[in-house]
Figure 1: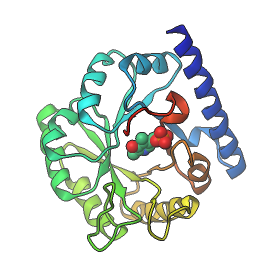
Figure 2: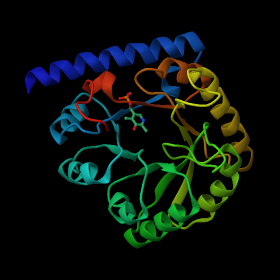
Figure 3: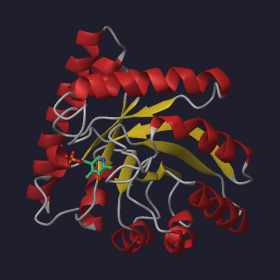
Figure 4: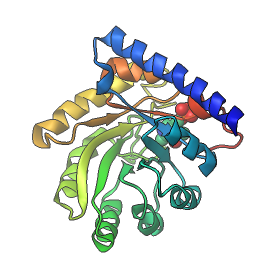
Length: 239
Ligand SMILES: *Cc1c(COP(=O)(O)O)cnc(C)c1O
């Protein structure tokens, strides 16, 4: 366990250095960027160590793994983010532990989240997941709504009881015009955020950037980076 703590501390220090350097290069203050550690596929014991090391934001993408982990870690001062594709039949469970859902991408999900948040007496922060590679369907391969669908969905979240519109999230596309152009993708997300804040000024979170591309996200103006493997190690199975 001590070894694992040393390992995670060293990895966190490296990620912290990268974020600090990216902020400096972009002329941004370090406090403008929040690190969210994506703990998917890793055990509750790792989450506990991360909390001891000062991590305050964690993210998960599968309810089956996240629900028991969050229950085991309920005593820790952590904010839990849900970042995976979310089926409406999992919403009741997710609302039980998640403080923010970053993967809101359809109105049926907004309705379900609102209903369960009210039922649980909780307020859930919602980010609209933007699919910059959305095709004709208006939806991305890995979830998300096309840029043209943001406004309607944002209005629905803002009007929904139990929900708070927090901002926008994206995953850099692997296909389409932004494939291999993470910086451009993240800049597009920033433009969309600027537009959204015109009508919803408090929706100022911009969640972008992972282990491989966090510098490009910070350069583009991201407020939150979601880092998994650079902190915890390369995942054994697909998460
Ligand atoms: C897994 C995951 C991450 C973290 O990815 P790494 O490459 O391990 O840093 C970030 N965002 C989402 C939505 C994820 O599913």
